[in-house]
Length: 128
Image 1 (tube, helix red, strand yellow):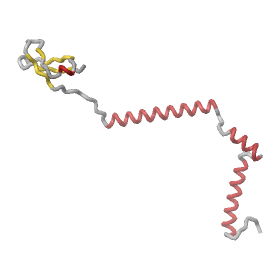
Image 2 (cartoon, rainbow, N blue to C red; image 1 turned 180 degrees about the horizontal axis):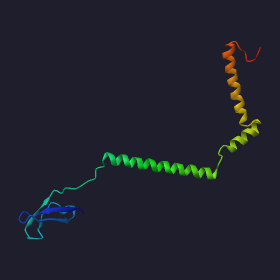
Image 3 (cartoon, rainbow, N blue to C red; image 1 turned 180 degrees about the vertical axis):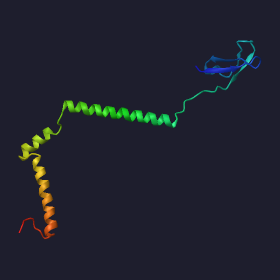
Image 4 (cartoon, rainbow, N blue to C red; image 1 turned 90 degrees about the horizontal axis):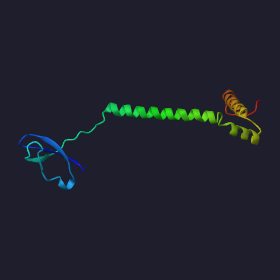
């Protein structure tokens, strides 16, 4: 049930009543003088978020998300300190080479690029 505000025109007494919506249009008697009081349009307050509040709220939410992600990362490190270890072991089993082969391949590619610069585009991949 809503709360309605009333004002007595005789004694200027303001009071509130909790009434059903069906009785919203009917008047009420003043508790001070007993005369007929008329219903007022109630003014209500509302909260309007300022720019500072919204920025602060967003910063707090982002800080909380960052804290949660860091906590999850720490938990993952405790549970599985090297998540790529199974992949490395499987690769080494299937190919017979480990991650050092990638380093060797990268060095070979660099040396090929350098030889192309030194000998030109006609370099066929072998030294003369």
